[in-house]
Length: 333
Image (cartoon, rainbow, N blue to C red; front, side, top):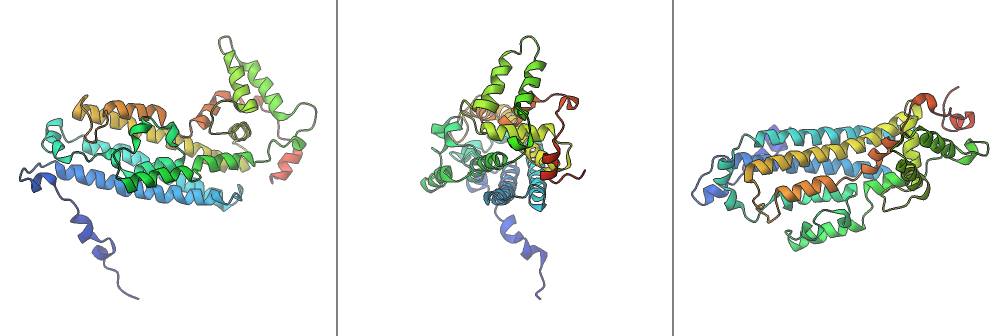
């Protein structure tokens, strides 16, 4: 067995020599450029880890045979928790960049053109793998315009790959909890639930009855989750206290948390860019603050899961789970 030496294992010589300041190349040393490079290199390392974790979760769901009551879902929940912890770190890391003042940035900013964080391939790949399709992107005509042709082709090829949101939709669709055979009688479970929900609406909320029908019955509109998947998602949220539904709920909740974390990162980025360059264009030619704010508002992937919270009501009003369903999903009596 060979001895592993710490600097060699981490390739520190290569890693620590990869900060080359453009200001030094031009003989105009800018002190804060070192911080700028290291911050963005750290981001790219964390993006690599996010892709690694999200990719592993996609692999778990790709075979379509995930056992909701066994280890696979537990692993997916654990890895999504790690993903969200990393995203939280990415938000906090901007606080270090905030120690650089706008004048410090101006010392080297124009030397970077046309390089821009907008050209981060890994971040674009992450968005695509989660489920942000090109047609749903803010400023989609501009989105790949600053990339080299081979990178542009790589991003466009991802449009043909199955995304995490599509796999989650298929996972929810196959759930048997709402099978009519478990809900005897003329009125099925979702009919009862719909009546309860509509009956709980107060004056001014009448339009929500149509929203219920659109999401859970007709599946109308351009939606990432089908009516069947949305019904299963709401069912899991309502019966989250039951043992079998705890991990499915935590998984769905982790997806909503990821969306929120990405939105926090974008919002924090908006504030930082506004502070640094005001209303000027980004070095890559984007509208700077304007583009980032548009992306923050439009680039939610799992928003429809968060929307399901609109249809929750008190636990005491939930119909009890039928004995046959409890038996089918492995609940002990």
